[in-house]
Amino acid sequence: MSHSISNEKEITTRAVINPQQLLEHWQGHRRLTRRVIEAFPEKELFQYSIGGMRPFSELAMEMIRIAGPGIRGAATGEWKGAGELDLSFESPSPETKEGILRLWDLVTEEINNVWPQIPPQRFQETDVAFGQYEQAVYETIFYFIDNEIHHRGQGYVYLRSLAIEPPPFWER
Image (cartoon, rainbow, N blue to C red; front, side, top):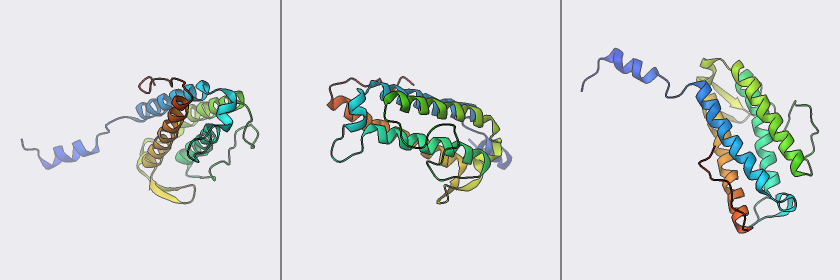
């Protein structure tokens, strides 16, 4: 099958998914990760570890500290360091599951509020996230999602080793 050059150019510039679909994909992962946090018993969320990996509370806080400032950086090009959240909550890590879930929900709301402010062309722009990761904005967002999937996988290992059935990974 042959295509003219103009058809090839048109095909290569069409989006596979649109920004709203990407947001829904990310938020699907966030809903699933939230259920993983909920599945942990309080003590094990903060203390349980295997093979020197961090407790899941620390992994959840890493995801929170990346996604909050990350969405604002993606939208504005102003990248504060991971963990420098402008949200109205305390900066030390919470000491309860309820506290982590509260922060998780605040960041989820922040993502939903800031996402519509990202101009479509911004996803293709190259930026230096957090002062050190130079890539297209969409690639940075993929990193946020990939990092969450990676750490959620660690949570699944923890839960299974505690004889707790994790939520099905396909139910996002």
